[in-house]
Length: 473
Image 1 (cartoon, one colour):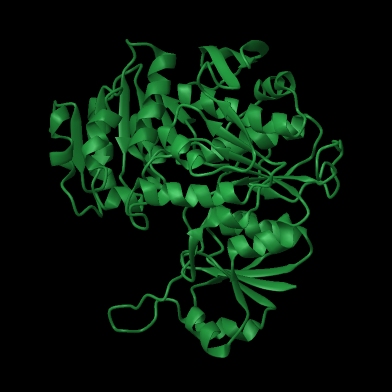
Image 2 (cartoon, helix red, strand yellow):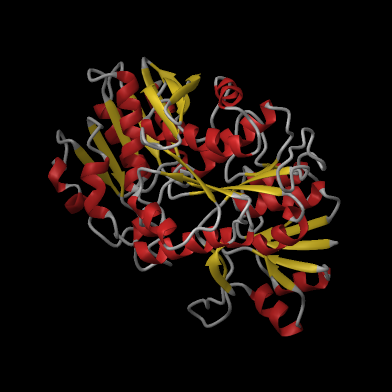
């Protein structure tokens, strides 16, 4: 079929486009400000990209319009529609669907889906799981909201038949690993994306309040997670973090599948040792050892989640641990962008306060107490822009020696939120409304041996390159 994707440059929709193209469909798409890296990846696949959401694209007459959740019925100040193409689709009665629904109907059918859900660590854990299954010879398909360095692409179909079938129900079905996002599906389908995926293995990695733009409170998100649990078949498995009270509440609301827990010593899967080198315990017995390049307790828990999920499809903990020894993480997950004059600059995707804290905790743990960490961040997610979690920022940034906040686009006072740290020149925290001022503040404070961590879920104005350039002067 010919599908035309609205909002094609997002990581999810771009990955879907790559899968559709690989499956033999004709794919075109549009977005506002067609931007890399996804635009480069898509053009390399021969996918035509159109700038903007003009109604004239209706003339393409695809079999189906696939609508990303960036699209809405919003109006501009002059009253005209922000997405004229969507209005034209509705007026014409043309066929349209959401990305998750198209994926469910045209890619995931007949596959054993392993879905990784959670507030934090979805991309990393999904990448770990895909790599474990690949190393075990299972040739899984996957769709990941980032680019795992072991694969170099964010999505692929994988084997059409499972290379090593098992005796379990659907044991011959090919495997597909998907990052299962709790954000809503589309403007016409306000359910979480993950309810479309119908997993046989569902990973519940952690659960906190997030997405304040669409969820009122934590119970509202717990309800969506329970919708996911309801879709897992009796022969399926829910892999749940045993350290999370919120997930205990989700499972207590009803679970009709086998549950495998991880995290605490009393759980099925546990870790003993430091995050960079630890034994894996299964029901109290040591079954494997992980020695790898990653740091942080959060990554240790991500590893346990991936090992437990792979166990459900017949991969032993020892096989999984051996695969993780060669795991290269994901682009923009504590990615070292360069070192100048003994000062290292990292790029990290963290944006939620807990993610900021775990990233900085992990780095502090690996560097020791004497090294200086400079945290440079922008509250860019919808939740952070709303100020719903601003009071948590001093706690989130506590492991850093100095903190620098980019304040553009905020309706709340970042300096006031960071006041417990001390704000201003010579203090622990500084703020700036533009990138160049922020860079100047960091450069003035930095000294040989420092580690500068830039944290944002956007491009952050190319601050990494600007910092490295300024350090060379």
